[in-house]
Image (cartoon, rainbow, N blue to C red):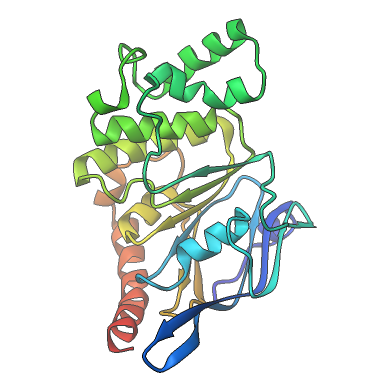
Length: 276
């Protein structure tokens, strides 16, 4: 596992995973048995870090994210956010979650979807309109405020979904393969949008992906999980300079070298998952 620089070790820890375990009960012809998705996983994420969780399908990436989000209860181990243990079913107010699918309300316009969290928080309508208008501009959605989700492309829907979460100013952002269903061009466009937004606020981010190129483009660190049961295999630092150009970065020698290093290790886990 890669060593953590002294300055990172001294930083404020926002998310701490300690010997985390999750098993699910599965029924079959031979009766019930436990399938272990995550086992003995440990890592820390410091304030302002953008960390990508990478690994083959079925290694427990989304399971870990959902346990941090308190949507799933762990079978063992511990999760702390800002030093306090999380409680199943009680999400932290300063933690935002962006799902794989956009989960927009089809009967609400772009502006009404983005402003939903502010409505729930009781933000006055005047302030709400101003913040929503700024969010629409930041996401490059000018001119689409009154459109309904059915009239938008997949990438535009994901922009709305992202801004609906970010408008509440979460300090910690959990993202579960939010761009996985998009085509390559649209995905790169969304990477540019997310990088620009993140540079302004520097939230602490835990980002689940199966796309190594995406992880290298966005993250400060890549935590590589083994094939199921998911364990932390390696922790890679991504020392590319910021701000980053999502397209130009992929043409650099540094990108190619780190891609090759991680791809070799990831490929070993793909092979194990196929042969399991």
